[in-house]
Image 1 (cartoon, rainbow, N blue to C red):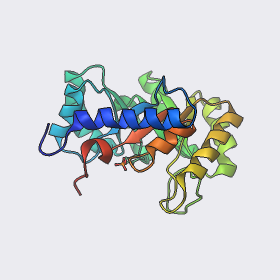
Image 2 (spheres, protein in one colour; image 1 turned 180 degrees about the vertical axis):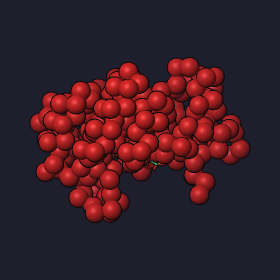
Image 3 (cartoon, rainbow, N blue to C red; image 1 turned 90 degrees about the vertical axis):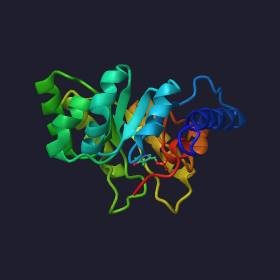
Length: 225
Ligand SMILES: *Cc1c(COP(=O)(O)O)cnc(C)c1O
């Protein structure tokens, strides 16, 4: 245990909750969705507690914050995998390609081009997800549903390895509706990876077909700031 948060216990608890929700909805809970432990704005002792518990898959939403934390930790734990889950500015594309193992937030043509260029220069070809703004919220990142096919096609044309889709449902909507939409969009595009579900709704996401969930506070406790 670190301060008051039982990180190892919470990791186990989140997996149990996903298994229960999947079983309840008639899904085989083996395999479980991959659990991305979202370490943004968390104190280092909590992140280390997850590493010591054997967890190796983490999510960060800012390139610079992730560099500060993981450049060193990744040398200590060489098998750590990092997903970028926050909006990516084009001028950080190179840094993101150098640090992360998956970019989940591809959402516009300019970013596709910058990522493709950075991957070519670094000869580092990361898998990516396209983020969909399923609620068409003006302030939110993500491609609109009507532009999704063109963006996926552009990714493919530029040689990006698009594995699937990611979404963050509007705070006031029933998340299950947005998850169902994302499942349908991925099916139509022949894409397999679905990144959906956060601390408040990951059991639902697991029960409707998430292949990865992004869980922060339910593992690490409340964030600073
Ligand atoms: C912060 C964040 C999460 C995790 O949020 P919690 O509610 O703490 O689980 C998941 N996905 C994205 C895109 C985030 O920015």
